Image (cartoon, rainbow, N blue to C red):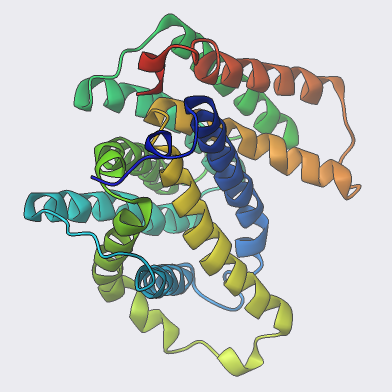
Length: 311
């Protein structure tokens, strides 16, 4: 078992702070990725072609970086668990989200995705026996209400679009929620780099048959510099950094606490739009933000001084 920060030089308080900052950083990157990835698809690359580059690039980076760290032996039974985690966290998660988003609207997809913390709380209770406390339940409801309200304010939500697209995004949301719960025990047992290396190696094997052939028709020579930079951002930041930060946070905080930061994503999108003059700050947005921040507070910090609330 790898040494967690509280076994070394970090105090318990510092460890908790770093874990929360890691979760926030991951969701900031995920929020920015909606804009960056949209510029690549479908004019330059098909959605599943982008997935292949993401997974292949992440696998190569994690494998290369691991060479400079002590090799950690993984038990055979845990390799099977990592394979299962890769099914839900890489293959199903990424493929179904991009395919679903291609068939439904961004508004519908956003509303469905902010349901992830609710699904995580459900899976955590039955799989890793995490208690559903009153504060967590209140926080999840407040955050969900604020996020949905904020998303609806940004556009016209209508679930009369593609039923298949909505179902694909919902299945992706369940898959990602299950991944966060399944990976939690492994993150407590092994170094985050070891876990990510195996997850993306297995993920690469799983997605290649469904994605690699779509790169054949791509005209890479015609890609402008900004598209190459966008691809680099998707691989390096959205996949490598964000996944690592998100899963590192699970070494300290629970999956429910981790997933609550997903509510920051629509808030971040609104903040960016206002910053670039594409939107103006209104009272509905302020009210939605208050719901989100209050919800995150209840889930994350209301009982954080108690050690049992971290696990």
